[in-house]
Image (cartoon, rainbow, N blue to C red; front, top):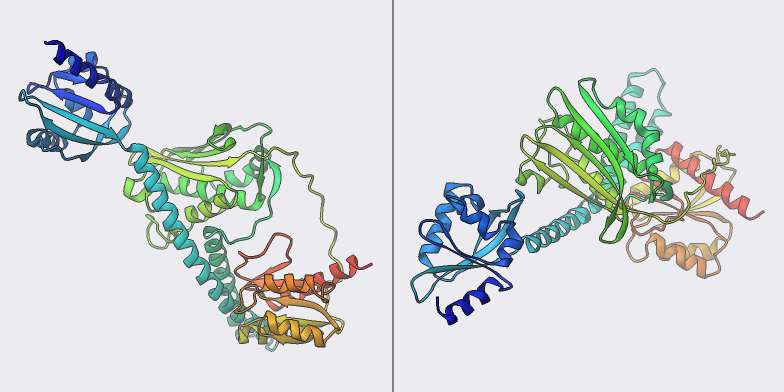
Amino acid sequence: MSDSEAQFRTILENAPVMIDAFAADGSVLLWNHECERRLGWTAAELAEMDDPLAVFYPSEDQRAVVFASIERADGKFREYEVVAKDGTVRIQQWADFLLPNGSRISVGHDVTEQRKVEANLRQAQKMQALGTLSGGIAHDFNNLLTIICACASLAQREVPEDSEMARFLQQILKAGEDGADLVRRLMSFSRRDRLRRRAVVFDDVIAKFLPTLRRLIPESLELSIDLDAGDAVVLADRVAIEQVVINLVTNARDAIDGQGTISFRTRKANGPRGPEVHLEVEDDGSGMTRETQERVFEPFFTTKERGSGTGLGLPTAYGLVGQHEGTIDIRSAPGVGTTVRIRLPEHHADPDMLTPSAPMRGLGAGNGETILVVEDDRTVSTMTSRSLQAAGYVVLTASGGDQALAILDEAPEIALVLSDVVMPRMGGEELRRRMAEGPHASVPIAFMSGYNDELDESARLLPKPWTPQQLVVFVRLCLDEAAERNR
């Protein structure tokens, strides 16, 4: 080898991109440091193998494509899945060139991390679009459910309790409640379900929930539990975390046919944003293909038999974890099982001391107080007014925030403003701000909505759909709280 050839080879071996060359018999001619760093094998280890390329491309079809590209040596980059020494699959682009001496050389670069970032970005964009769509549907659907539930509840008062009509009306109410539960899960997915987060010791939340968790698991399955997050604190809504756990464990249970094990683990870890608390749910069930994994967070996508699943378990968990500023990822393979891992940021504060709520007083009918109902849906406004009037309240109505302000100027006797959140021209949050900055700052305002993305956590909210009884109780509670503050 001449000095110039040796110098050229040294440059290739230390190049910042992957460069290799194999002889026709498969022997290694060149394997630079970047190849070794990315794929784990040394040139000496490859030299001892009969067919080194078979290590990187286990499939004969894959190797045929690689050999064809090497033979063409046209300098075009093509993308391949390459198996590294540790068994992981790397995504790499390689181009093949013909040198003046007749030998062929391959130049490549690893795009694994880039493809992961691109996939995460596509997933985030898809989830955002689906979340916006589901949130908008939930708003309109909740208005319809409010009308259905309110009408059925009011009609029940007009028929004998033991009549067939009363039973029909009860079925309508039950269907309305089921529809409301479906909408709530959609709202959780779209991250528009309002949470009440407190500083809690994560392992304590999980430990108190274990008896319920065990009841979800049949005796044929073993539940292995390892709570090792210690005294790590997270800022979390306890009910939401329990819902996430139920969804994950239920999915793990359904993935196992016959006997198997579900492992449930918590631990502290260091993440890219700092200290984290991890929750892992692992099963040894049927596992998922890559195509299935790409769709598991889509609402209503399910691999279960028709009637066996709603397709909202993982989407709901995805939305709730996102509202906790956390992330959720899945590792799975067919026949191997699935591991779902949740990462929550650790919260550096003392756990909140939860005190029991004061007993609610005076949740009876109204005493002639004037309530201003602000609702742009005419039917919902009518049902709200009738329900409150039947309970002993005087009701004024406005179709939007601007009209509500005008009525407040003319009716100083208003005891409470009960407003929808999303309305044309002026929404509920803007109405509250204008009231607080003007002469009506002393008038309390509460909200009823099925779409509460615009509200902060301090706002009083009655979620739609509601029944007349729930509405009356909510209004009475708001009035009593306002009276207590003014004493």
